[in-house]
Length: 196
Image (cartoon, rainbow, N blue to C red; front, side, top):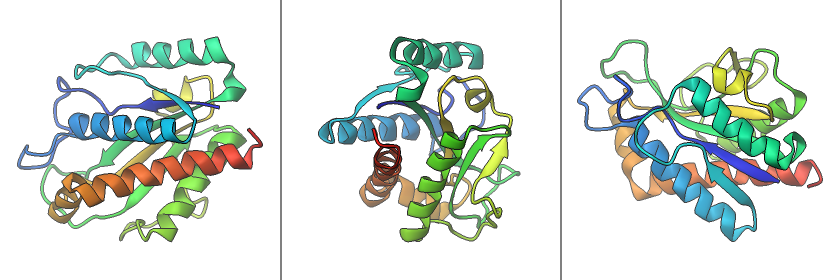
């Protein structure tokens, strides 16, 4: 199994930061993707990061990068995990907490399985926070990186960049390790559950 890790947005994407502008999602996401890649290597799992640089590419270009990797390997042997940080609707400090996961509106069963592993580990680690969770345990959306990628795909939203306590925790060594471990364990459970 080959894992493609998706970074969040880019340095040139407006918004996507804490209300005080000190926390930048693109920077955090790239650091976590690098940590996950290193941890997967130790587990003998091959992985790629979709966009290594800080500048965002168009969604079409991002999807093309992912699908080029998938085409070279085979869709059934790849998964795509895009790592993000959530935000409240208004760009002001809030009290929303917790991790959630998205799949495409017409997601494959394998995408749903991957999302359910993420949910289960969040529950075990008490990372669901104060948000309401749908009965399916994952949210559905028409995001291009979920809709147009040619392998099982999820997009994770890890805590909130609009909550002071969450921002502090996400930037701590404990927080970064917890989020890294969450994704590594999600991927391992998916691989082990699918007989790869």
